[in-house]
Amino acid sequence: MDWIGALLIGGIVFAVWRLAKKTGRRRSVETATRTWWTKTARIKEQYPNPQRGTGPMGTYCVGGAFMKYHNLNGGFPDAVKLRDGLTKVNPNLPRDRAFAYASEIILLNDHGNFCEAWDALERALTF
Image (cartoon, rainbow, N blue to C red):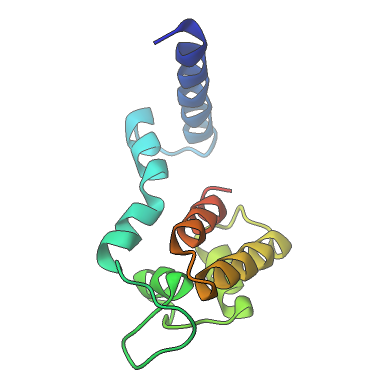
């Protein structure tokens, strides 16, 4: 690893440690970093097959998988319901940004771009 990469990783670890210290959380930097990287991975494991548009009972889109994972009435939520779910799970996310992310997730999902929809969800959860 070159010195720039080491410096970048050190900066990220320091930022996570500082945030954990500032918020009064008593968990290690390693645990905080591991949690940050796996927000959508856990949802994908539990809900691996999102669908486009609307479907029969029991199916879901990427936003619906997020909503079901957090017990927020999943399936195929509209942008307002998905926005409310995103702001409930990530209180650091402003409502206008949450609506933009929700709209992006729904649009990408409806076009069958599930990987990009998962990426947009990850960005919303780590804002």
